[in-house]
Amino acid sequence: MKLLIINGPNLNMLGIREPDIYGRTTYNDLCDLIIGHAQAIGVEVELYQSNHEGDLVDKIQEAYGNTDGIVINPGAYTHTSVAILDALKAVALPAVEVHISDVDAREEFRRISYIRSYCRATISGRGVQGYLDAMDLLSQGE
Ligand code: DQA
Image (cartoon, rainbow, N blue to C red; front, side):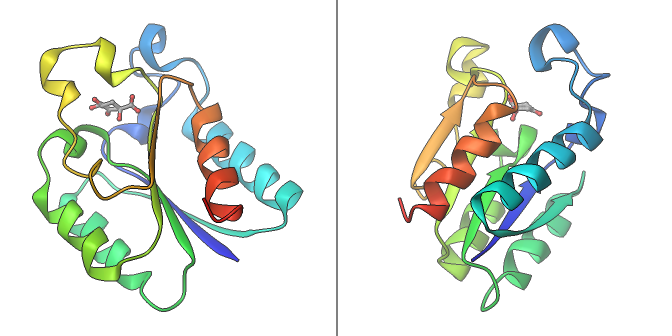
């Protein structure tokens, strides 16, 4: 099984950006955690991060036919992007939405997620552990 882990804008700044909200784990640390977890549960993993909406759409489209599931934290595009929702629908792969912070307990605008309706689950507010939990869900076929 192959999983694609997609991170959107500003998630490359993890560990530096607003550590009181997002913690001190860096993006590189997160990648190491994900790679280690993938080995532990016996799945292949590809990691991708971009600050650009169209690049995220391209990456989702590229997954068609060669990937079994997508873990996606679209960052701020969660709250604005119909294009990312449409790309997920286009490839029709199982997907789980992840947010490091508890988006429902923050500003009103963060409660809107365009991708939530498509995703099998939303994991929010569990820090970087949420990515690993999402991998578990997809690898178990949930
Ligand atoms: C985020 C929450 C979003 O509202 C925010 O724009 C992010 C990160 C999270 O992981 O908690 O960039 O998706």
